[in-house]
Length: 434
Image 1 (cartoon, one colour):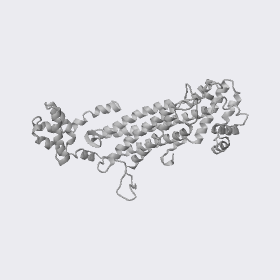
Image 2 (tube, helix red, strand yellow; image 1 turned 135 degrees about the vertical axis):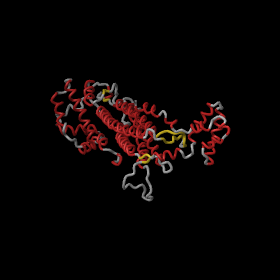
Image 3 (cartoon, helix red, strand yellow; image 1 turned 120 degrees about the vertical axis):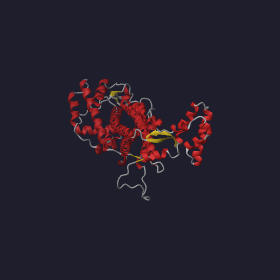
Image 4 (spheres, helix red, strand yellow; image 1 turned 90 degrees about the vertical axis):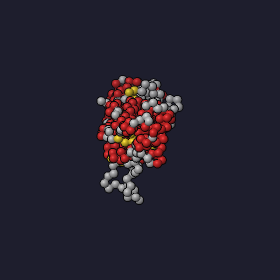
């Protein structure tokens, strides 16, 4: 990813230096296990650890690979240059390249998941704080973009909190799904390496041994991981679009924080644009872009091919780095989001009581009027509000068919906003706990 959308901790996971360090640790731990089994001399295993504080020369490895056309062999050659050819002669004993590559990729994905889980914790904290801050601040709910019935801004934040809580569970499940390693040798039969080596290496790296790995770790695990990243990205976009809508000039119920000295447009000095949430919408598309290739990677030829490899070299870093950045950007947006309760109330009242139509409809049915007739009476008066700018309550009070069933006091009572917020506490207890 370009630096503009990247944070250092996540970038570091995917750096060549980190990758080669994990490769080294896999090889060194495997040598220890081989020595424990008596397959290789103990002194050779111990010699491998001479490189534990060495910074591997990425340029030198690339130079060797330019000749060998094989990245793992290039690394092993460089390792032998560091610790000595004789000391290195048992490195990679009985292993195949995928043992190193796949186990490393999963270590990187686990570490990436840990960062994303931390990101999610901070986002949830911000959403919860804003939900309670605006728990009873009434705003109009919308369906199809059209005024529906009153909700509260707190409920808006609460539903996003609940959605992201589910995503946190999904991320944890994805981390567990991908936390496996394989040191099973060519075609995964352990013919040239004892399963105890795999168990030892996996324990040292915080992984579980893959039950059956052919020559690669099954890619359904990776598909699930990237699918979860795609779902999280979609949830980010869900929140971003709501904020973008709220910031529209004719709505303006909330807006992104506009800092001192910030400029909204090169041409129009008055502009304050929702640039951060528009950016998040775009970044979500990038993360989801990784999902289909990850799904297609599941189908490999026989025990292995490398059609998945080029894909993962790109989507692994790009998807996790982008999502890490997006989660942190969204947390900042939520943290500083400016809310306008007066505008929320003004928008709610824009159509002069029309949002209470369902209460009147239900009240008429409870008074013995058929539902069909009740709907006709309420809609007749509602259309005058839409088309003539009338006041809904006034129209209802003037409609003799309505007042034949409902008294003026009963009509007025149906316009109480408190009716729509009476179960907010119940919903909050469901979302946040008692």
